Image (cartoon, rainbow, N blue to C red; front, side):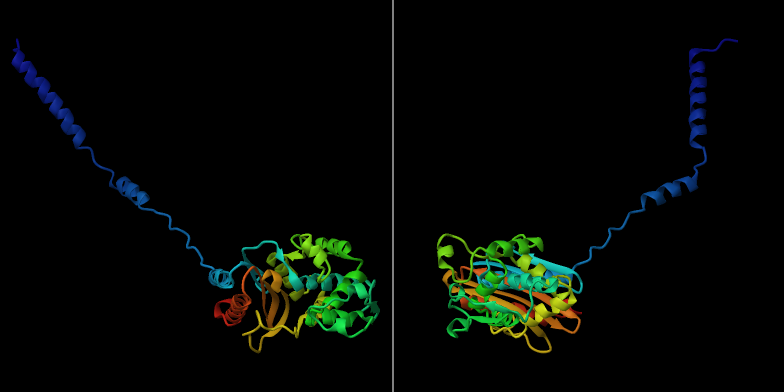
Length: 315
């Protein structure tokens, strides 16, 4: 039997159509499809970022203090209980009389070692007798107990008492070794008090808020010289004659331990303080130079007040 070309073509088309129809009729695996969809929908959630409210507040206060004080100003704030601290504009600056805290540290270290005694007499030479802050220079006294000299050096910022202690400790060079040994790398004693020859040649005592903050944090936690001598250290700082800066607006029940430094010739106003209330402690340091005293003291007073009244820091 013979087939025509058109008949053959019809058969081929029919076979092809049957194949396509057969492929389209294959059952769909719905479970597999659903599984694929569900996998694509899984999206990892971002971990929420915790906002450190204390850091945010302190940073704002430090920047405000720097702006208000003007000149070259740096600030340190620390919370020893929570092991937190912050600093702004840390740099080496003129120390003025806050350098006396390092002299106190070196002296008490010697007392702890048994090399000095708080009751021993210390000679006050005519070369160490200078004016400025303190009243010892006008008394005609040539010898005084070491402990009493320390009290005058810190509470009254007596320059003559300070010079006598520098001599007693072996001079500027030995004191610098003691300072560096304790890890205070940005602090240098380069002259005695009111040594204008040294100043005119470009040598001045220097420190930083980072070093002072570290010093006072260790003292306030009993980790500088040990609890007994660190407590004695703070006792010398309590009742400072100058309360016009960081403690100016701080009220009870806060206990204030501070040491100020002033050098009007260079526009220097400094203060380093520990504020204590029960177990709460705040370490605050401000070093400011090249500005006006009214601006500097106002900035410090506001900072001390706001820190000791902050619910965020003291909760």
